[in-house]
Image 1 (cartoon, rainbow, N blue to C red):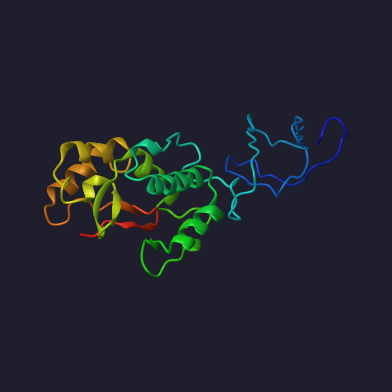
Image 2 (tube, helix red, strand yellow; image 1 turned 90 degrees about the vertical axis):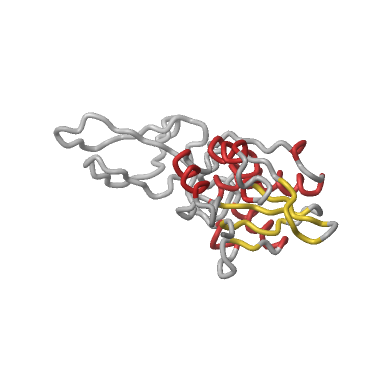
Length: 222
């Protein structure tokens, strides 16, 4: 109930069995404290926790995702070009805001190759999020690792994150430490992948060309 008006904002039956319960949407309340009233409590129930939040899903910035509390920021000063930095910044801002509409728009407008050629931006960045946590991974790649030029069209080369995915840094201690420090791999995973001279780094990579086009976000090619 809303104490100031005694308005009933929602009513439902909750099983007090220790399991998580999600109510129907509750409308109203604003910034005022909501009064939760229990009509009956079975014997043995000692505590009740209640958490209020926005309705998940729907492709909006209020929906929670894996990057919502990550606390990592992209530094545009590290960009190879101003255009590439602007695109990287836009991706990080959309991911940390859990703004699926913006990420889908960016990937669509740029013609980004995602995961595999059969997956659409809506499938990769729709909320609720997929198990591979693309929102968090995008932020960890761009804000936590160093991008380096690696291939692409002459004069408009592609900048690749993380640099350990390039031939130049495939055996760099600093580059492998970087993906561990960024939270993309555990130390054990990094050691295992580095020891495999055939494949090397097999985690996620992102490529943005010098002109600012977001070219791909997918698993490293062996």
